[in-house]
Image 1 (cartoon, one colour):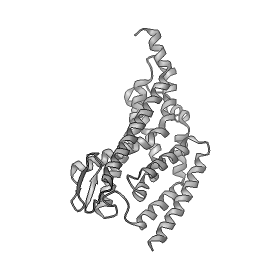
Image 2 (tube, rainbow, N blue to C red):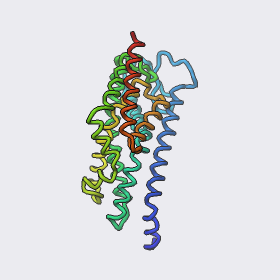
Image 3 (cartoon, rainbow, N blue to C red):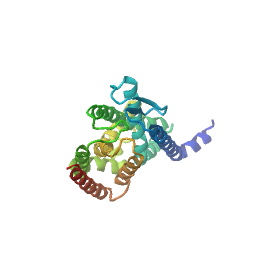
Image 4 (cartoon, rainbow, N blue to C red):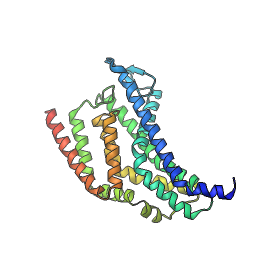
Length: 271
């Protein structure tokens, strides 16, 4: 490849990276839709069984303990879900990182951007492990159905109230500000990182702020339905609006009030 052709590719790095993020999001959502459809089993009566989110019509007796392979499938499901939900909202940060990198290196920003994105998603992989363990515990306590829906309006209401209150906390504000200002976040932490480990660590650090901003919203899935595609999409849109809309902080607080109202209503329904 001659120099002019290579430079032409570098000038299109934004398009290439954006296209990659779109493809990643589409693939994640395609897999989620496939898993949700598989778990429905065409409307068949699955009483006494729980579905394993493997896309292969796998099931286990509801009373049987989780097997390691089931834990692995649920863990992968959470990872795919987090990729599908969080990629749109992190796209501005990744694109800004690529733009800064374009001016900082002559060899192109692609490798470092990939490691940065990998570090970001690594933080959500860690969350997915915690979420999988929590799902196991809730199902063991009979607080989740075999189809991954909540069984207790009291627990559901408490989770909604928790999420609603968290939307108003100073910690939410701090983490959301880091997510809303991509360029400021990058420049305040040394700018573009050429070294693989440094780029990975910077992505992981941003993932930590994003996790601090959104963890309570993700936990809401245990109240609304872990594989409920409507609520997965609704929460993903809320996360995106909070981060990219100038009035995102206000949107977060309005959503918090809605969660509080929904939680109180659910608690009254349980009495």
